[in-house]
Image (cartoon, rainbow, N blue to C red; front, top):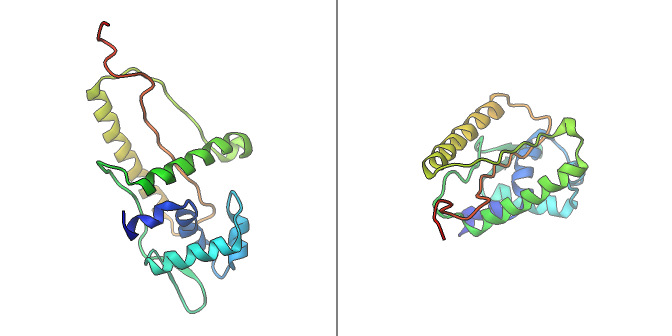
Length: 167
């Protein structure tokens, strides 16, 4: 998988990549307290050091962080690396926790259960990719950050293939 996927091995990396620039001059302990779930100052320091070393954040002489690129994304992949799958698992667990522990006016959950063809599946996957691009455009329009949010998009089968086969 290589160094390029280390970013995705731990949920703290993408969260702190967004959080650090939004808290100019903040110490790792303050950033740790801002995370949900809370983490240690040592974990924040370790992640920030990695992000700077990996050139995903830059740190100025005053200790302020800035992103080197607006967006880090896995994009469409034929095979999802293990690190990315692990991140999706971690974020899915946080989503489950948010159902119970984040007020409804601070989160949005919705879902559909639908019957589709393979052709419809391909069209929906394409629309999801377009939707992600739209979300990125909205999020990067403003340079200020008030909070760090996670958007999970899952689309998976609830039945086995070939429902039309007669066994």
